[in-house]
Image 1 (spheres, rainbow, N blue to C red):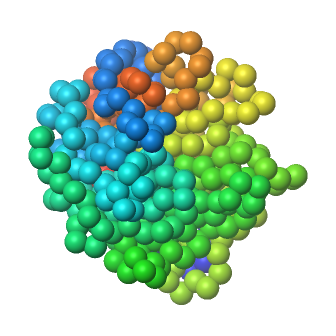
Image 2 (cartoon, rainbow, N blue to C red):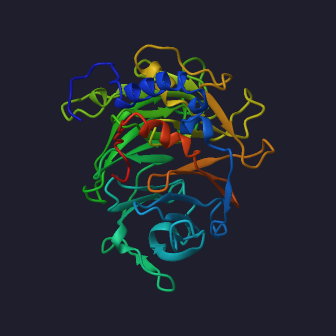
Image 3 (cartoon, helix red, strand yellow):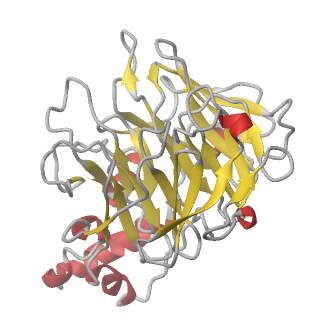
Length: 379
């Protein structure tokens, strides 16, 4: 992640893969809708997460490297009994001395190597980080005790994504003030955490955060709270060379730096799939009256924007698809991408909806003998 501070974005390998794929499909029209972008949402199957626990407003989750889903609500972490079972058991309990007896989770994120789990336990509460091996078993949930099992970092947070196995990038802010992105070193002491600001001057509330296959950081403006500057739903990408250099003594300015990608919903709950498509959750306030959907941003169009092409137009269905498993335009969705199963799980309050691309999405690539390697969160 070392490099000079220059405002550039590297071109992912998937660009070449998908451009070749696109060319090939011209000769095979039946495969033209063969990418995951085109086929998410053709069918769903419902998953019943654990019921919302005391002190929580939602159930938030992620996927382990083996494909089992985890969920957090109340003061507990739940684990799916087997891949695809949809049956969840409590396997860990958060330290009530740190959470005041309940967690209102803002994020759950498994580290790239699968060894650790980070949980934002809620407003004015800490970020909990603990080894995956600390999880208990059904009927015997393990206590995530501060110090002996888990570390609870008193840092502001809204969303987070692992930059690597020891650093957690966190979006945070105070309503009415510019938001920022920090980089938490999970090996630092909880009494004095290293939590450096790497992106500042987001002229609005905190949004989601994600990394693509090349380590580019994506974040946005969750709610435009200032006059001028970025608006609600603006998503920008920042190359690792401009924010992650250990030699850097200055932060990146969100408003003046980075590459503008799109203006979608409230830029929340950002996630990438294996083909470089970006999922965007949240809602919008005052500009998108039909905001009840999860957006899927086309990976090819993102690659084009990264190298100077146009930003993605949310009104163009060829680059921004709208998924609404509820089919009522009233959802306020977030998402999980399950690397092991290839499923996109759309999270609603009481029901999760899993969808997987049609088989043609993989056949189209395999027929060309191409391989795309992603810097997976669970690699």
